[in-house]
Image (cartoon, rainbow, N blue to C red; front, side, top):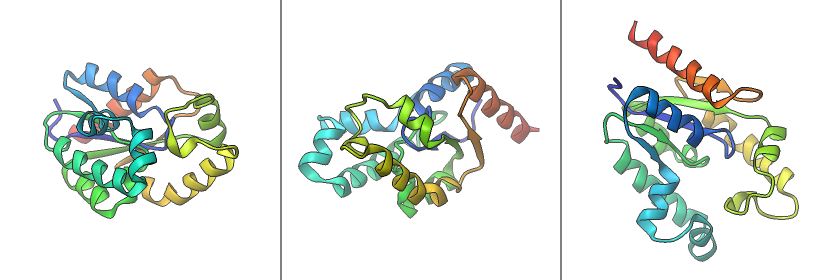
Length: 172
């Protein structure tokens, strides 16, 4: 049983939601997808929030929703890829939870998100360059985690098993 929320961070396409669902099932606790919480709270899509209100308004909603879900125990929380940008978010996650960063390479992001239309920061004619710049900008923030796991070439189950082994080591 989790004593603190297990919080998954990582770039879009790193597998946070997929791995989070598997972990929640194996740990017997609720799963929360932060992006889904934002959509439910706002009553509209993330694309619509970005288009009508801008990225900063989305980031403010993201911080508010994080504050609400981080206090639900026990829980596995899959964050949005940019939640780590805000110092206060990283601080709250590190203080209240166990932070697991799921790493992913640029080629894997491009492969996993090919054809995606629900990712406003993935849109545009030069998505690969935009993604690379975002990944580089966020790298330092993703490093602020209790454990980092590379997801390239691994199944969702393999990544979940690595995290479960890490949790067992923490308990020992």
